[in-house]
Length: 250
Picture 1 (cartoon, rainbow, N blue to C red):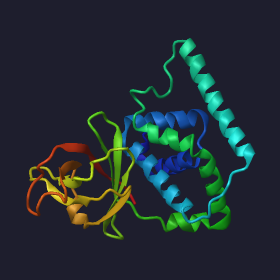
Picture 2: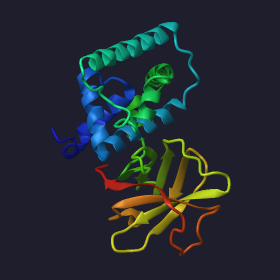
Picture 3: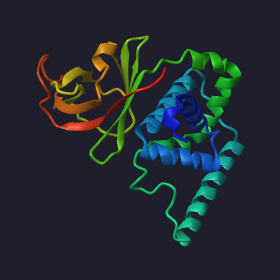
C-alpha cells in the first residue's frame, strides 16, 4: 500500500510508532519506509515531537524496576535476533549506513524508553488524550533537513493557524558562538529568500505567512557570520542542511 496516498493511515502509523504500540514486522516495515521516503520520515519525527511536548506537562515519574527489566529484555532480544541474522548472512534491519536518521529514534526507543512509557501513561491517565491531540498544532508543510551525509539534522513544520515555522534540531550540529544558522526558502526560478536567523535553542518558532512557503520545493540552512546576512542579501556561507518542503493534508 502506498502510505503517501493515505495520509490518515500514515498519521495513525506514525503515532503508533512514537507511542511504541507498533510492534514486530509492522514496525520494521514502517521504519524501512521511513528510511526510504522523506514524508514517512517526517511523520515519524512530527509525532515524536508531539508526544515529547505532551510529557513536559507532567511531573517527573520514576518508573518501576519492572519497566527497566522489560526494556533490558527487549534490547537483549533484539540484539540476539540481529546476531542470528548476521550468522545466517542476512543484513540487519537497519544498517549503520542506512540508519543515520534513525539514531535519534534508537536513542528515544532505548535510553528514554522507560521515561516515555511512564510519562505517556501519566498523560493518558491525567489528561484527556483525545483533547490534547485535537488541540495539537496544525501542520500544513513539513521538511526534514539533512546534511551532506543524509543524516537528519532539523525538522521544520509550518502551522497555518499560528502563522509560524517551528524548527526542531534533531542532530548534534554546533555552529559555534561566533556563527549563526540562517533558514532559506529556495523558490524555483528565483533567488533564495531568508526565513529567519536561528539561535542555539533546540526548538525555535519563526513568524511566517503561508505565502512565504507556498510552492517552495526546498528549504536550506546556511552557516553565516554571527547575526546572519543583512536583509535583502543572499546567502554568503555554505549550505549545511537541505531538504524538500512537503505539503500535507491537515
